[in-house]
Length: 155
Picture (cartoon, rainbow, N blue to C red):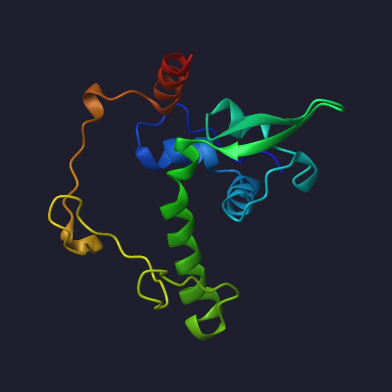
């Protein structure tokens, strides 16, 4: 299950996200982490990349024998909306909403939860056609350069 593409020379936020979480196993590990899975034995492989990108961190939970749990970092927790949106897409376009394998309920109101995108400034729900795209590619970093800068800043 190796990486299928190298996005380090791209100048694109989607490519940057895929460089960190683009392997198919990565989002499954994150899904499990959001569900409370923390121990290596429960995943068995592929965690070094998530730790090296600062999406997860290890915490020792046993001295003898030494054992570690994997915890979502702030950066990892910020991927929750991505996973919720992907789950919504799968429910709608693969299973059909009436056949969803997992249901999310908004605790505050008790209703079924279906994510939407909203403008941070005004709160209005935003669709694809409500957005205007502009490029800053002339002065932006490549994905590889941005990841390197982020890693250096984290050290």
